[in-house]
Length: 230
Ligand SMILES: [Zn+2]
Image (cartoon, rainbow, N blue to C red; front, side, top):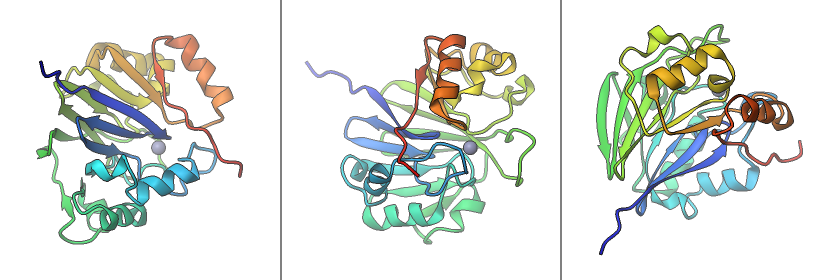
């Protein structure tokens, strides 16, 4: 009997996640460096493994980023991974793809659907929350692989009207304020209706935000990274 491979998610830091299906992987918002002051970063030793494509990051087929802010994307970090991992490609809006080596990055005009190994990925425009320091295009990614679907909102606004085309999914990865605010909760419960919800994107200390999530939405999976001393 052959068991179907399971979709596995691993939190890396801030909104960064590794998605594994069988022996293949995708990474979303997991190749960044400095981040934003006060926000969670990827611990230094882990970041080094990701950028240098050390196992299991040598299995990455596709690199995705919901938007170009420094706590989600860094062109030099992506380029270093592409150099170390010949199988990997980047796919994203032209603003990011144009910063990467030609031939290794696909500029995506949304809406779009692409397949990378076992990962079927859709790209939809989903506006960034306001106010925002710099105007940026934010993308809703839905990945189907290993018989499951997982959505990544990026730093999207929480107005229900933005989600008219968003699908129901099995797993949702969203900033933690989607489960702690009434507006965000409506998106989680009425739009995505996921059985697993990952609360990520620590924009303050874990001591401050994690208890709020545990109280508001006890069933959430909490993505919090051990932080290096700064
Ligand atoms: Zn962010």
